[in-house]
Amino acid sequence: MTPQEVLQHHLQLCDEVYQLTLEENRFLKQHQRTPEESLLARKRAFLTRLDDSLTALKASASVPPPGRPDVARKETIVKAREKILQILHLDRENEQLLLRYSLGVRPRPSGPTTAAPVSHVQRLYDRHV
Image (tube, rainbow, N blue to C red; front, side):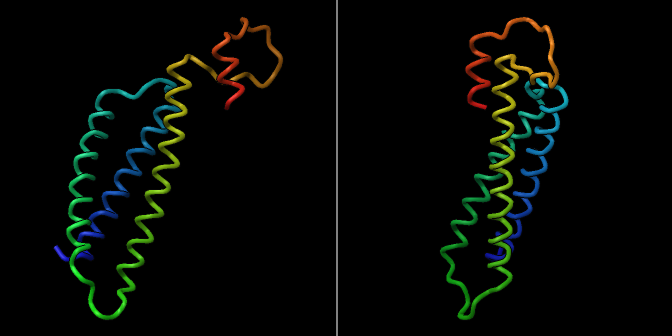
């Protein structure tokens, strides 16, 4: 593959990872529990593909670029970086949701209620959220 094709493949893989992370986010918000094993297995499979893609990127980076600047290559790199930042942001939110649901913390109701007393762990968590 040419360096541009390697970059395009990596960008496509980043898009797929973003869609999977978005799917995980929707699941967490809807079901308020950890995802099913099938989703976790898909995430693990993406790790292998990402590892292979990074190896290919490193190999293609050793190929010297042509004499004049390659605008398409730069645009692809910028798009990949932006997608990676989106993935990281969404993954951080997913981790916070996983922590919240694993601790058994539920969102607070908006109005006054006569709910059961809040646990010490929940109060500590609520202070830091």
